[in-house]
Image 1 (cartoon, rainbow over the protein chains, first blue to last red):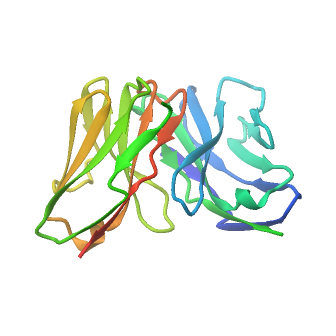
Image 2: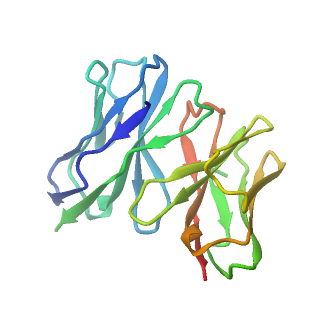
Amino acid sequence: AQTVTQSQPEMSVQEAETVTLSCTYDTSESDYYLFWYKQPPSRQMILVIRQEAYKQQNATENRFSVNFQKAAKSFSLKISDSQLGDAAMYFCAANYGGSQGNLIFGKGTKLSVKP
Amino acid sequence: DTEVTQTPKHLVMGMTNKKSLKCEQHMGHRAMYWYKQKAKKPPELMFVYSYEKLSINESVPSRFSPECPNSSLLNLHLHALQPEDSALYLCASSLLGTGNYGYTFGSGTRLTVV
């Protein structure tokens, strides 16, 4: 089965500190794409970062970076210099090749940022 | 225009009503999607409209029916809904049907069935 697993229902980080959110996935496909989405209380799903499976280099977007371990099927998100506005639900998601564009989501991690 | 626009933002309807949700994008994306999201849960795919072909999640009841009048617009028609259908309905689009370049989501319609 093609799955995405987030094992941390909730995480907390102090403002300006660094936090890492975990995600593992399972697929037999060789071609797939991995995403981290942020959903604040305003409820819009916002793309944080994207990783192509065929690229070995970890994706980076400003304060957000991923640790993509293909052999271990792990795709963690690191948030550096955390800000109050980072507080949200974070979903790890995958689009596996041939799945007609279907995004498969993990259950989400609720991130709190303490001032 | 880099947005997916959903209307209305909130909707309250009775179980005998007929209503429609609207989703629009002008980014030239070739695929559009409807997702249903219950509270504190991840979104679940309902429908995909990609390259003029509709794909349906077989678990979605027939009281939900999508309509794609053109490549920029995707409606979701609602009829005889149940209280358990109350949820956030998210629309998304992607440049290619395989989602290679990510998905752009709208801000959702909060639906309450009474």
